Length: 242
Image (cartoon, rainbow, N blue to C red; front, side, top):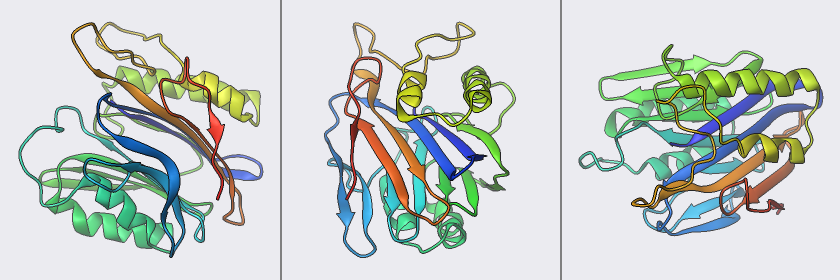
């Protein structure tokens, strides 16, 4: 149930402002952000189970890549590729356009997912399900990815997130603390929707396992990477810079 938010070319001097929650089995092992690759330098958390990552930044290219699995696909049959490997391999590319072409090429071998690729000058979403891969070039504005297909009209979680994102945009340039609070939302607009910050039910170990906030500058520098190794409502964020 990951939820990924991108304010793209909304705030002056910060063309990429990202905030996201990772929802996962809380027993799945992972490492906090570190230098995953030396050349090019890629900063991000590491999944210990399958390798790869769900989120990272290519520090040379000023490129952010992150991914959300589609609902119901975590245990559905084998796949010729790891979705975490897709993120890491996409991050090896020198531009959003190159990463997008790679993502389109590899998609047919993989389970369903929505991949976000964002740099200061280009941003894309590659939305893949078996037999259907769609690419969207993002215009300036607010964009949200949930575990549904991108931009489906009947996604109540996405509707709520977009409304709250637009409120942040109207307030002006948000500091990190504003986005930390944004990710800690427990409310929902309808019974069938899930909250942004998820806590496990008594018989479950599924919930929000981490949260991230990332800013990129127009000259492709990483302005900030803040990470909370737990639900953002109760876990402090810490800065991670190389």
